[in-house]
Image (cartoon, rainbow, N blue to C red; front, side, top):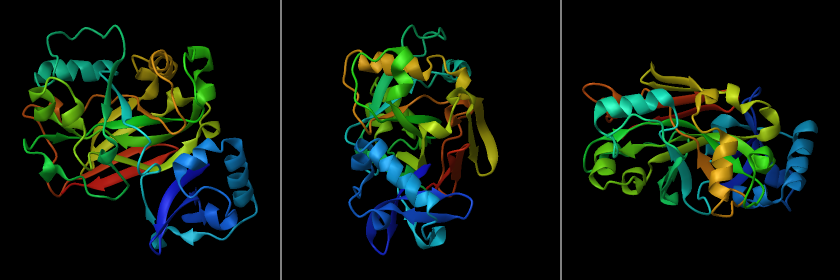
Length: 296
């Protein structure tokens, strides 16, 4: 299932995206007792998913996609988005050669996952403008990524049990001010500008993705393919990330883990090719869909 948060006639609700018919099933209309926000819906677990499946199977009326506005699936996460740095081999190499990363002393693989976070106020939805103009250093860069949505609370989760805690997956653009990232010698400020975390268009439930390693992450800037790699190329795979994070903290339903970006970011070019007003960033991960945002 493709779960979405949408606005229609100034009301925000949750729904199912019917990808074949370009329509939205309003889950709150079908089952008024269901939560009206995605975070609370995720906590209902199988109860909510069973209701959503019933709505789909009973051919509920669809709102035309053109009639609604999609938001980020989780418009305001319960806490910071957890992210992973340097998690594709070729991306490490481009960071090293660019000299623009916080730690460019070595191209060696990290011994452990590099974890940082993005502020919740950075989250924005499909079609919303990426406000590169807010970056005082004029160095906004794109990072197409697969994001994991946690569905079941847990601590000390083993790699063997990691997938039992995954609710689904979405697309995330870890937009970054490269010069702020470097100036502050840590990544939070450069990653957390308002609007620097487009996410969507939907959460695809884990049951629809039997082998997440086969998903392909592709990013285009103005129709030029810049990033193209498969999740199987992650240095630290998703079970390792969940095990690592849950070793020291309790993971909660609705937590978001951005798994890292492949090579091809703007910083990796010589000279760098940072985002400019008028650019369009398009990230595709099938079967999740396409996350597209203009740059302002």
